[in-house]
Structure formats: C-alpha cells, structure tokens
Image (cartoon, rainbow, N blue to C red):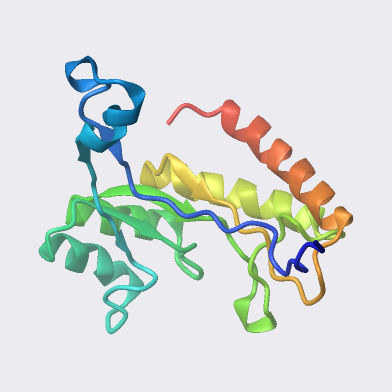
Length: 176
C-alpha cells in the first residue's frame, strides 16, 4: 500500500503537565495498572487563542482571573521580553511553554525548522526564543517545523533533524 503524501513534518500534541499520582497503585499488573492509575492534570490557558478581545499582555491577568494557574503562548511578536515577563509576574501565573519565533506569519512563515535553506533563520529564532523562555521561566519550547507548499521530502526531514539537534545542544547548556 502506498504511503499518503505528507504536507507537514510534525505536529506535537501535549498537556501542560500530566503526572501520575501513583506509579503502581496496589502492585497491579501492567494491564490493570493503566486503568487504575490516577492522573492529575493541570490545564493551562493558551493565550494565543483565549481572551483575544484583549491585548496580549492583558491576557495573563485574564487567565488568572478565569482560574488558570499556568499559561502557554505563541511567540509575543512586537513585545520585549521584559514587557511580557512583567505581565506574567503581575498576574502571578506560571508560563509552561512558549512557541518558537515563527517569522512573518503575514508572509506564510510558521517556523523554519524543516525548511531547507532557512537554517540561519531557525538558529536566530531558537536563540531569540530561548531568551524569552528564560525571562518567563518557561521550561518548554514548541519548535514549529514550518509551512510547506509542496510535499515533504527527505531534505525536509534531514534539515528538521539537524535543526532539532542544534536546538538540543543549546538547550542542554541552560538551567532554568
């Protein structure tokens, strides 16, 4: 059977911080362990999609007022890391994730990680995002692969892997 043609390189899905409460309650067998395991889930407000009637900076306080203790965001284009960190601090919420700087979305840019020829743009975007993540205390960065107009090729996969390895080397050096 022929594989379907891919148009995207990756598409991660995540919960803010799902943590098992009990590793193996009552010594259950692996089959019963999953069904009996209690999971504590924390939900975070994605400020790119919630409270869009307000400015980006106001959304931190609106998330707190709505009962959220943590948030995640797209990259705050046009705002300094100091402005964003102050809004987060004032609202007293945890920033669990920030998306990598994706470039100019009005030009269709949605990241550079899997786009051959855009390696320098990726390096610049991940370095810029790390600075914001550090200022916000965000321990997770969502790396956007980029928007492709054609089918995914081996070159896309290779540059994606190379760029992710580059990001890992940068992130290994950081203590949040």
